Amino acid sequence: METAPCSGQDPRNAKFAAGKLGYITIPRALQEHLARRTDLSLDFSIPLPVELPPEGENFTAENVSVEMFLSGILRDLAKNPEGQYSAYYRGLAEALRPNMPAELLEAAMFKARNGNYTMALEILSLLEGLRSRRPELLLSRALVLEARALALENAAKYPEAEEAFSEAEQAYETALGLPLGDTFFKAGLFYRRRGDYHRAAECLTAYLDAEDPDPPEDQAKDPDPPGDRRVAARKLLAEIRNNGLDDEAFRGALELIRQGEEEKGILRAREFLERRPGAGRGWFVLGWGLRRLSRWEDGRACFEKALELGCDNPDVRNELAICLMEEGYTDRAEEELKKALHSDPDNVKIISNLGVLALKRGRNAEADAFFRTALELNGEDPVVRAWTKSPPEP
Image: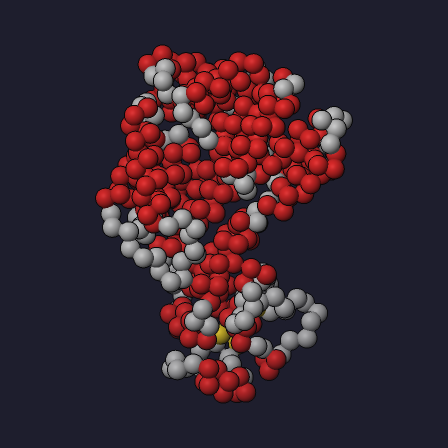
């Protein structure tokens, strides 16, 4: 029987069952056990949900554990958060396992960091049933959906990625209805990545205008100190306003290229650059469209121009390295990829491209090490798995 994490169990290693639910009254022996573990006023006439074991396994009411009840309660609340006994179930679950919400949230974000987005979302659904519409849960769901969309985009699964990004956007807009102090900041980053700089500026401005309260105790830990986020928000706002990144042509170019309409996107990018020739991100978007059309030399020139104008980030250097690699400038490609990796050490795209470059140079053992690292960071990445199973001849 797989159960929700219990006290003393590492939630990152926990598994979550998906069996059928049954409803039973609590056996007398377990009634006494429950009464000793909680000060909650217990009503033993109310049937409790229990996660049933697979068919064929011995099951009687007498051998039901507290963990089986807790797992059943979570499943029941996820399916029917406003049921007849939902309030009682919530009270019982939190009385028996006060740390369970924090454990579940940590487990969900751990699964997401390891590329298991389906499990992460399932755990969040369980937690949402227990604590309906809590701001930290709404934000966590948006972050997981965004991470899943980025993984699909990195794997060049563009139609699936667009659908996933739409889900993430809906989740962010829902989260903004009950925002935490940093929900506006995270949403601003999301919209900036999506090229909707107007909405990004709105969210970042709202973040800077709001006070930054301490996060709830059961919120997943954020590695970025609030002070650093506020500095970053000001910098991003200045970038948007100084470079005219909320320009309709820029937004249109990014969206068209993202949807696979590279030729049309290139035209919109050139239209934007006629008005803003000093906008490094405009040159990056133009180069991105050209690179996707395998116009390596033209793409390389655009990425070099973007760097010259101060648009220096891992994505620019990674894209530049791809062009250099295809043109045969392997030494320069390696230099750019290493600079990109230094700025973003866990970027699977960069690590896998270092693996591809090593293969092209005949360094198979080195390539294998890069691909294994990429798989450890995201075991679900289909591109890395494809290279690992059947790499092309260098």
